[in-house]
Length: 356
Image (cartoon, rainbow, N blue to C red):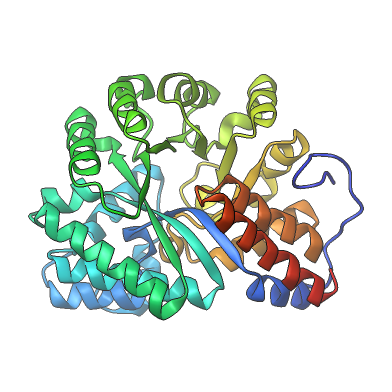
């Protein structure tokens, strides 16, 4: 099995299940592909549903597992938006954001770039400045009280087309909050080709934001090429089908353009048929900078620790190999150089103490 960082062969192999799980639980981590609303725990979703009755979303946490069972990607988007509809005011936003950070702290996530879709909330009546104040207040509290550093990726809700792109650009550039580092594009890929969003990404990049669109999750490798060539992508959200194009894998590897891989999500939405068929192994074998992420964890019945355990099994990694995977996320992050050195050093110190 190839080395996570270089793609070259290595002798690392997965140890005992309990051992690797315990190692992962304590491992300092960064997460680069995780959605704001999609990270709402069953407890928080149920609380929001109870506060705002009349929604199709169950107010009983036990019923949410069935509600979060998706027929296909289109059904996932439908369910996701029904949860968005529960967020009615700035107090809901602040509560959601801080509680997401609390769940991250429990997993030893030190740094996260949270994908936020501000236009979806503004469209539903939350004033834009109140939205920004709520996420920023939660971000500062998360750092002070939980030791979790949050940064924002504002993403275009693809299903809203160019109107969503224009409004997201306005919100990002006109009200640029302190924690904002990147500009993304989510939602369905089918019917929403990436090149049409180029002018908006051009404006965001000119303002200093990094480009991190979703691409190649439910469409082919050409969508990834379009994200690279038209949107100036510096990382690719999912990029699952990139594995079907050897030239694309070579391009990503040569330029150290990371893929934000979310294994359980890909199975839950039907983007990949089974974990055994997941292309993460081919990505690593090609030398691509692979990061592991949870996407919409409660909706998919997972968390980042679980995703690391899945990746460890699929890639046959021991603790040292898992630590290298964690350092990939640090390298691909938009942390400043000093922050990257500090978090990578924390991972190394933890691994050395473990005996890795």
